[in-house]
Image (tube, rainbow, N blue to C red):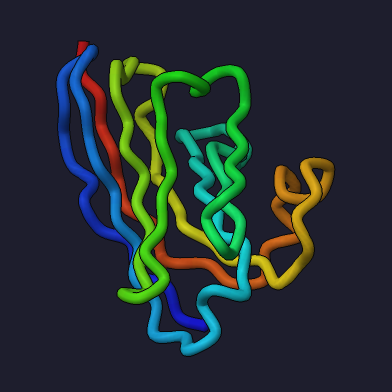
Length: 126
């Protein structure tokens, strides 16, 4: 499964950005897909996940209410809409896919995701 993220760039604090991720996989709908981010000098952290059907989503408290993950299985794409961005959210954002059943305990763990895109930089300036 190959993933390619796009849409990163520079945005001012309080602004919005929308990331997209496209895959060539024919079985895209069978994967949980997620977004992670990694700031300089920090570990990669979970940002959002969505189930294969798109009916279930999960966010950590740090982004809940500001970020929205969605997917379009017919177009093999998923998106991350980010609002009210903060400077500390400057990071490389990665899309990923996991062939596992939905479990909150599992979808937040990096090592559950088998496939990763190369990442896209989001810079939030104050």
